Image 1 (cartoon, one colour):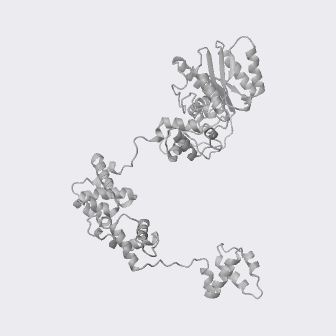
Image 2 (cartoon, helix red, strand yellow):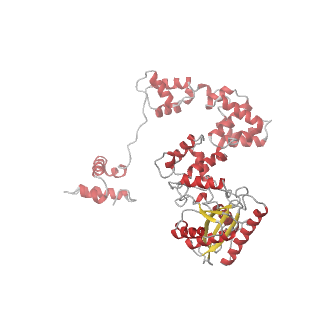
Image 3 (cartoon, helix red, strand yellow):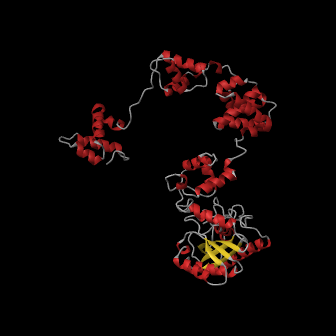
Length: 518
């Protein structure tokens, strides 16, 4: 039985009784009771010295008496503190060593001496009018507040007392500053008493003069927060989407320290806390195994430059399509955010019988912002060939169309490449050119932004009764979207439709696929 069990005292007594028998094997008993021989012999020695009471005290460490120091050393400590009221144990220890004092106590011992002799270390504290405030006012607050401050509003008094008696030290100091100012206490008296700098004193009173008590106790916020700096966000995600090896870092994933250093080289300075806030606000986390934030494609830069060059030189008789699949998703009662009356809670059963599934393959033309979609049974090469034929028939008046998709196996199959070559060898119809995205770079696929908006608008919080009803809702969504951009021609990215998470545009810093929407 181990000595860490609940019946530890009984186990110890049993160990002692067995070890006291003639010819007892102490090593065997140690294995039986799961204790080390060193602990066992130490325990038996304690029992022989203390009797049965040793069974209770063996696990306790001997009490250490506080370190005693000479009166001369204590006077030196108090003298240094009197000359330097702001100093703590470490600085006083350093000063005593500088003076050549023998056997200088540790900083913790010096702090204990200061606590015992606080009235001697700062003798002027008792004469200060503010010294009795924290001790006197809690008991006589209601009776004397109006007498002490007849010109101060009750709301201000309540707020000041609230921060004085029950908030962190920073707010308590601000309350002390204001109370001392109302009492007519000199700045030097309070600053020396509570360890406050004159700059803080003046800043507190200036904030009170400008905005009252509320402004004085309001948390300090920078007017230009870096977490909302769009330029910094763009550089952060542009860097995260590239493999660390591009920047000479021998790692496969990013660390905040490495990211901060690389951004510094690009002229963007930010702390690790700010970088973490920016990444988390975008919906990403460092430990989410299914979220792919960084591409490991060795040709990442080359593929990205090619797509940017195509988009930058896209002719009027050409079209560029971003293609991907959405789903399959189950047709059932879906959870989501919705209006509810007070006290009303919408419930969605965790286990439901699916009414069917829907798998959608869609393409967005970046120049005209038009969506072309078909419904599929599976994700395979045959569906990609079918989508290609749909696009070539719909955009027959174009000279060339570019198809851009991720590195899924059915997007790069030999059968698909042969179908594209066969189409280009025939006369009539646009030429098909493939502009693949880098591997594991779903965040660059523009159609993912449209899918995220569609999911939030018509799939989340839905309860379609059949796949046909869900498909009808999806058809209406894309018809309305296409009609809007047909009446208002704009390239993808100039307007966010519905609740799309980011502008539907190609950018190396985009996070088109929302990890929170699936």
